[in-house]
Amino acid sequence: MRTIAAVVLALVLLVAPPARAAAPADAALEPATATFVLGNVQFLLVHELAHLVLGEFQVPLLGPEEDAADYLAAAALIRGGQRDPALRARNGAYLLAAADAQRMAWSRGTELGAPVPYWDTHALTIQRFYKIVCLLYGADPVTYADLPQRAGLPTARAAGCAAEFARASRGIDWLIASYGRKPGEPAGAALEIRYEAVPTLATGSVVAALRQAGLVEELVARVGELFRLPAPATIVFRRCGRAEAAWQPSSRELVVCYELLDTLQRMALRRPG
Ligand SMILES: [Zn+2]
Image: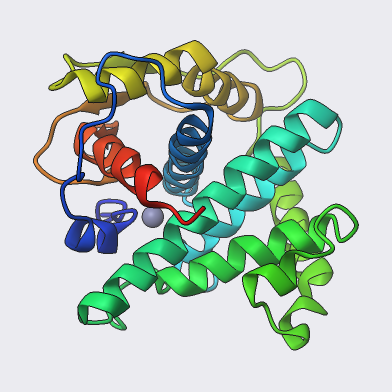
């Protein structure tokens, strides 16, 4: 039996202190905050959906599933924007936000002397940061020409990023060709979305931004186009006492904890300018 899909941004849970001041609780998110929060939610949702797909179809993997889920998420989002300039700009900004959160988590952990989880199934947050940066640059070295320098990505790694993206992209092509919905096949089982009652107005403002953007609906529609799920599943937003997101095969729920949305909102207020 598969273990529960692992926690995203685990280090953040350890190191993100309470917000110094509440955000305007019932107001719309500021654009920069919305980009940071929605970008991270998009990345973690696609990462968890990757776990769902890899698990549902028992896709053979060489190497850690966490790495596969990260590569799948980043490369799929980059590919999603390749035929639509507006989507390309949005997904690029969202992926940079997801990368930023990983770097912030790493910096914060370092500042506080938090133990480095070398044992974890996830790559270290700083490695996940460079992974996303490398794929973005590798997919579009013109748009992101200055990204390696800004991110401190050494030339030795940057030189291989185009090949790294191409390999991830071929992996996605293979996944879809091997396990995807064939032309003319009916849709698979439903992937529902459920928002439970929000605990605070601040959480509510994130949920409102998510719903307004239609981000979750967009991802669910894409999964349904690409794959026929063998059984229904639900994406549930709920309070759970910890800041995480996880695909839970036993309950067939992809749970996004409201505490994670709150943590991301606090991080957005602290991100470097
Ligand atoms: Zn994971």
